[in-house]
Image 1 (cartoon, helix red, strand yellow):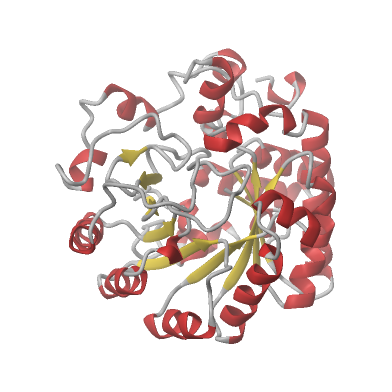
Image 2 (cartoon, rainbow, N blue to C red):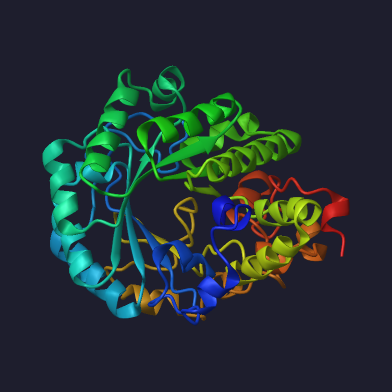
Length: 393
């Protein structure tokens, strides 16, 4: 992820990271991406079941019972293993994680083991009682997916009234004093709603928003032709930077990030190089610490059935199952050739990526997207919007 507020608006300095010696155990959550040990943030799809019908769902979820989900006892064992391994954050996702009845129990266990617990949810099932429980547990953050204004959101979510239900859940968490943010996946059909997301953030006093670039996975694979083209992507990244700076200029320092396209990092740097060369040099240092795409290294995924994936979008690849081996053993087993290569992507990427001057700070961008379009894990990411001139060494 690329912190627009951190980088472009100067909310983070290199010294802020170095003060903690870049150790993930010591770093505050907003600085974890700059850690040197890259202990993985774990996306845990605790259930595949979901009450909505989102057209871009990477898990292909439906509102049905799925077999083979980890039991409560098995899940607690996974939490203990992850804590012992040193995973700093456990992000509970789905499907819709709130459809799992033991979710509060698992969240509480996570916090007790010393990890930060985060929920990624559609927000529609959050009521006052659940918001109160989340607050008492000490939940670090609730990210609520919003695909645009009411008409756009309900169309994407496939259920009328989803927007109002999501906003109600957001307000309940916010009013309970829980840090809450929005998650917005950009595509041709909702890009016009990006300015409205900034308006909603201001009107509803929302602290954070992640703008996700589309990844072609699950039902999202059908949207490959509905992604933005390169020029459209550049324009929306510029818009996000402009609106974030407007917040800061008006004394509203919101946290804004873009996710799943690490070309955004060099793009921010190149823009700053024209506007503020001194800050550009600091941003380059931070981007080098970030190291770009972290699938299979600084981010990992555990599915509802215990399978371990490089990230939440790459479900056709498993490194093992936590029912058979502890996560820590699976994640550090360099006898798996793909896992070993993902931890050092540079020598393995091909095409434009192999000769790109930004490879050390981009990490070759998103491998799952490259595979989805070309069939080749190591091909260039087709969503990279940097020009040949911009990537020339």
